[in-house]
Image: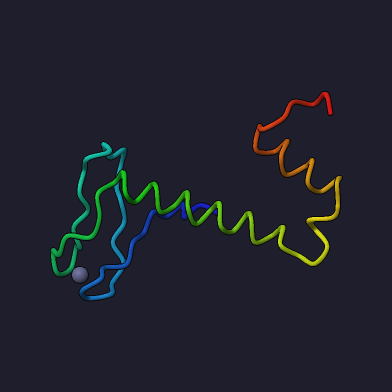
Amino acid sequence: MFNLSRQVKCPICHKLTAWKGYPEFTDRLHCQYCEAFIVVYEEYLRDMLRQDISQTMARYTIAGACHNPVLIKNVIRQNGLIKDRY
Ligand SMILES: [Zn+2]
């Protein structure tokens, strides 16, 4: 699930730096140790969403899941793709 600490590993020194407060989409995160540029907030959010979607999809790749209509309907309903009329 989401990285609630909002920590990001610096690609240069590999130490953790965290977003603080409520950043704007264009705000840039720099390492608090070596001051290297790490990421823009909008890019950080996109990466977080990609990871969350990948983890959600991985949970449903168990054997036989694609043949289970109840499971498929639940996944679709949870993602707002269909209404409860089905
Ligand atoms: Zn660093």
